[in-house]
Image (tube, helix red, strand yellow):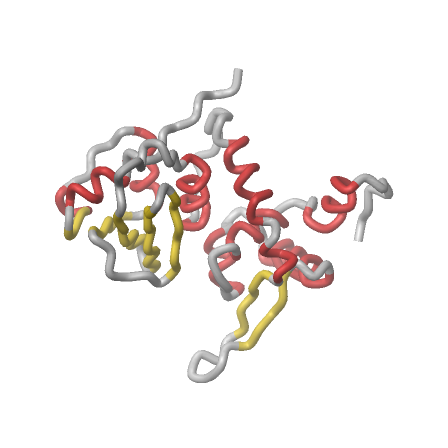
Length: 208
């Protein structure tokens, strides 16, 4: 493994998670374990060989581990260790910092990238007096987003929200950050909850 050979804590951290795709792999695993095919789908710009190499390096660094699911699934998944989970505030801070920069990519947005875009722009002040949950049905994935006591939390494979938003990640992003109106076909349940929910994420001012 390459090293910066620098005693600074920043350099020592980057020795383990500073390679290309490493922190994006962490982002994809913060909300729970995934199979290799799920990671490929969330990171389509990473080749199979590069992704495999980064996963090996992160496993060697103690950031993640492989686990075999019990029958009937019996498939192998990657999940963050306790040490890896400690990177969540780092990823969130980077998301907040990066969201102030111009959007230059036309690539697809993964579900987890959308969730951290929402988490990094969530405004507790805008949520004052609002309590509710919205199930985000994003293709084959279902995420329960809950706002309570001025905090936003996500639960994978969640159901039972006050409202359901049925769309892909790009559509949700355009509704939340570009002012696109929600269509009737995209909302089930309490429409008022859904419409209030999408206003809780003000776009940050762009960096000069």
